[in-house]
Length: 63
Image 1 (cartoon, rainbow, N blue to C red):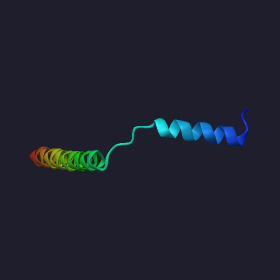
Image 2: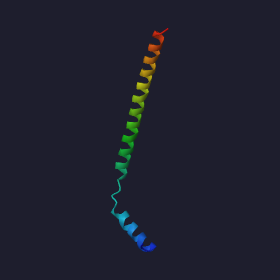
Image 3: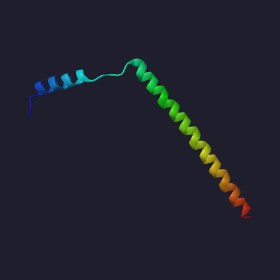
Image 4: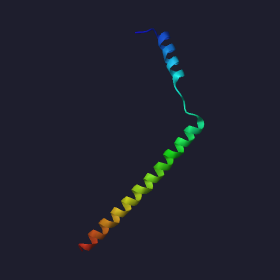
């Protein structure tokens, strides 16, 4: 096992190889994720509402 100083040098060298996203890329990705969350939420709420109403109609037919 390498000594701690050598380990930290290797960590720093590897961190310098990372290509970090730009601020704009981060903001665009965040906006797209939020948009997909909103769209998925609307979809699942509408499906849930539709199924609830269908079950309600089916149960009232049995009365």
